[in-house]
Image (cartoon, rainbow, N blue to C red; front, side, top):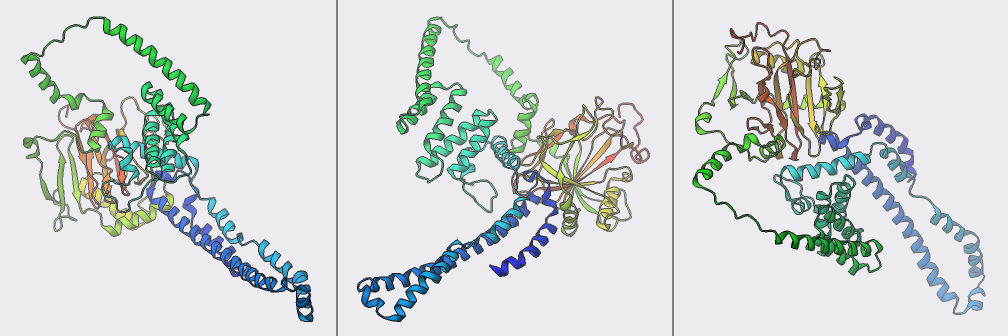
Length: 549
């Protein structure tokens, strides 16, 4: 332990110097930065085990002392006078009581926690906050809704593509339910309190008790208007705790409300209902025709979630037949004449094209290395203020990399220019993003609309004419890029890039390019993108001869 104390100041300095990126909050918004927390926890476990070993060593010394004295005193007390008649025994008794018991007291009182507590105090500065825990919990609820997962599936860790399956305890489920309850989200409160109760009923040992869970559960169900079920759970609560005052009052209230409902129902059934009209063949045909338009008429949120689950509309065979893959050299660009790149059409309108194997693993590693220390919570343009701000609908961290920082970034920028034929001098810097727990970016436009005339005024380079998006990791489940208005869905594929125009040649915005990044269900999603602006493209992408082109 003395040796550990000597090393501690040195170790502390190294710890502080190698963890600058952890000073920022919002850990839950970036899986890449959360990996640092695993190593932090590993260090703490090592320190904790050192502390346990020191305590065990101390207890072992105390135990040996106690065993020795137990044997000695047992013999001595059988014949006290005879035992003390031996002068050595008398001397040793004086020595033990005067000196050795004092040493033992010092040993028992010695503090072996010093190293562990010092380590914990240093590391605590980099711990996640309550906001991080709440953010991660809400991410789980978001994933549950988007991918239509039940609480049991998440609790047992049976998610698609998982490598490291982890079970949730009843206490974990209870905490999720509590966070939903705090947000007045009674739907999710019910789901997670019910799962916590199920695990407790199955015999799981936990620090949370059934009475507390039932109290939340019955109230959440009542708030959703299901009085009968709420009454059932409240009665069960009273079986476990007959003196629970709130439950006693709730039972009386629920029974009164149910009786009231029954009376109202009887009055309603007394009123004669109109006979149901049969559906005619003509109406049936109209209904079938209407079903074909269902997807386009759906609310955007529902279309977005369906596409994330892979349930969107499919292209007709005729449209699909117009999509091709090819070797592409962008009109015999000198860099790609001998080594054209693989290109495939992903969608016809808007035209979405993917370039395959367009960024190497080595380049990806370098981009991540440069970006990771600078990752900060991703921001969006506030149309009201024109300023950048964080938003709940964008859960990720991002960093900006300039071409002059590293030859790799300059090389990537040049590659985009060669393959698109567009000027990069007026483009925004390469933005690198890493998504967090349930990381997403809800439907949005990349270009500035007419009601946002000052969206990119500061840049002085006009509107965003096009978007280039690199996928720098594969994603086990979720994380697709979807276009809700048209039904397109593009899965992340490491080393590939997707390109599309946000503006028509006449400078008008293409509203069909409204897109979103689906929540990451399982995995770690890294992307980087280049937003290309209008200025400098006058001769590279000229306007058409007609105003509507």
